[in-house]
Every structure is written in C-alpha cells, then in structure tokens.
Image 1: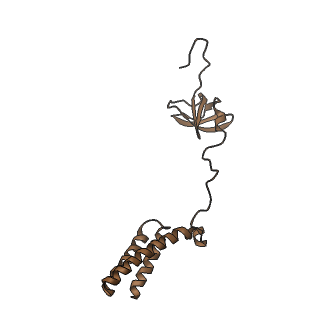
Image 2 (image 1 turned 180 degrees about the vertical axis):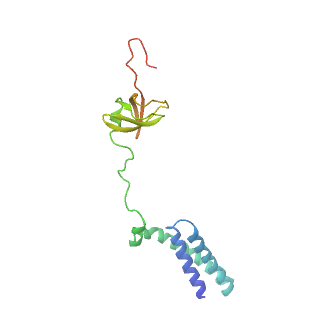
Length: 165
C-alpha cells in the first residue's frame, strides 16, 4: 500500500509541476506514476478497491491542477516564476511619426524597397511602395502605417498642364 500512495503523490506532484514547466516530459512521467498507482491498486487490493482508487486519483488530479493554476501564481514561489508586469499603455510604434507625412528627405541607402533616409537631421527606416530608389535621391513621406514609414521618389513640381506619373 505504501508504494501505491508514494506513486500517487509523486505522480500528482509531477503533473502539477508540468503546468509551469512545459515540455511534456515531467507530466508524462507523472501520468505514468499515476497509472502505475492505479495498476498496483487493482493487482494488490482487488477490482473494487481499484475502481475506487481510480476515481480518487482522477478527482485528486483535477483538484491538484485547479489549485495549482489558481493559487501558485500568487504564492511567493509563483511570483518568482511568473512575470508580474502589465502591458497596459504599451505602444509598439514610435510617437509622432504621423507628423512626417509630406516631409522631404534624402535616401541614405539604396531603397530596395526598404532602407534608410534622413529627414530633418534624423535617420529613419522606411519602405517604398515597391520601387527601387537610388542612394542620394530626394524622397517624400507619403504615408505612415503604424511604425511603417512609406516614401516615394520626390520629383520636380509639375508644370502647368502636366500631371505627375
């Protein structure tokens, strides 16, 4: 009987630990321990005890998992395991990029279609609409999509009656 209880305790511990240490090995070993405990209960104590033992193992496993999920993150050990910071207020894009729409700059690298330009003394990562723009070419910011700055080659102002291609 001692080995049955020992396998149950080790198995429950390993299955509960698997929640916090992913990979499957610890949980699988814990499942084998629980299964071994059930098999030993059937073989050493008979089928009636084995069925009760199986129901108890399932019930204890479910309770152990729910307690682990609910209370471990708030425990002192759980606080060391899990990140406590919140993502509230986080923004992945740079602030103020929208103000660059319409501004002119110069290609510091060849844009094929991504590269680097200089606007007002600042280096900016940009992309084109798919065009290839040579280094040193004047460019203009045509739009900003999140943190993606899209530029186009700056052409001379169209004369009266001419349209820009």
